[in-house]
Image (cartoon, rainbow over all chains, first blue to last red; front, side, top):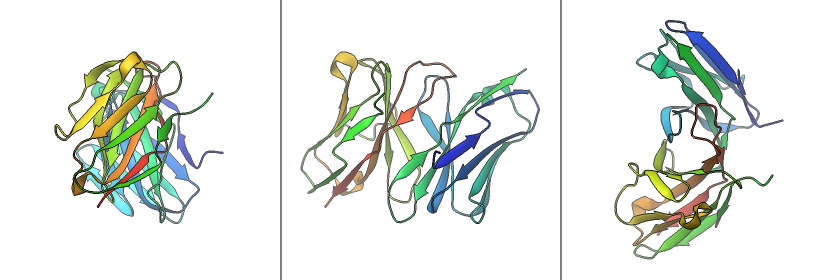
Length: 109
Length: 115
């Protein structure tokens, strides 16, 4: 079992839909990252959070430390949101970063 | 199938010295990426190779950083001369195809400490 699990692995949506991507982890962490990868491109950091909730534009990330779970929400989705979204966690007391396998999102017009 | 490997796992050098980091991608993966994570901060993209060509090097911080991928297999990232702010963990990732469905596989990282 991977230490960081994402669901779903693949997701398709119609433009305008509300999207949720989930990340669960099994290790103690100091922070969690949500990353976005566009086709063929490098990864861009969306959020880094260690508690609560963060919002940036149409993106919202939440984390529940007790439940070891985080969600990334996209409101009013748009085709340009199509990308791979990756969850990564900073392990406690180390600088080790563990990456999830990603969620592939396609938003159709 | 072997994963992405990086060498060394740790490097401690003095300011002004040179360090070379190496990344061996998964065999057959044309795409290779370098990222940097400064302690407590977000992950930053450095550059992207497609085979031996630099597809995107917009994230390289300055001309003290030089990345190469001769022959399109392993890649090196040289920092010369190193500065204190270069300390961090350098990650490498590789993927097979430059499409929406490709997955980037990450290496374990090289922790660089510049004193």
